[in-house]
Image (cartoon, one colour):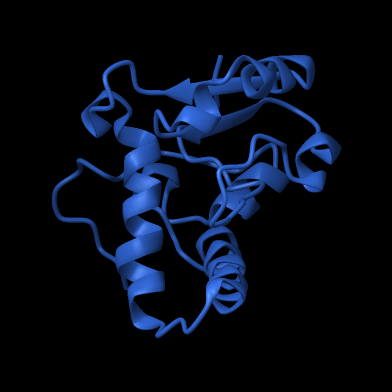
Length: 144
């Protein structure tokens, strides 16, 4: 049974090119990894999907290109864009990569989540016995 719906982000890749290779770090991660992408031609190619399958990486992409088909992944993308990345004035791709990596670190380690009892994804991931009551839909949650 799945312990929680909130998982840490384990890898990322930001690139201006339509590349079909996995980043070097992807194959070093243990456990169930989910690769979420849009339906870009590079992500739909047989070479790319075969590479994901060979590395036991679950493929997550919409059937029709509608982001509402995968709300959890789209929520994470939205958090990264609106709570973190929009505050940076990236001048180039390298600067954007650096800021995206920092944003993911903050998301994983510093941002409390209602879906896991106001804990962080890294804390829950690293602590098997963490109490992960979902506070997201509860009324009158006392934050302080």
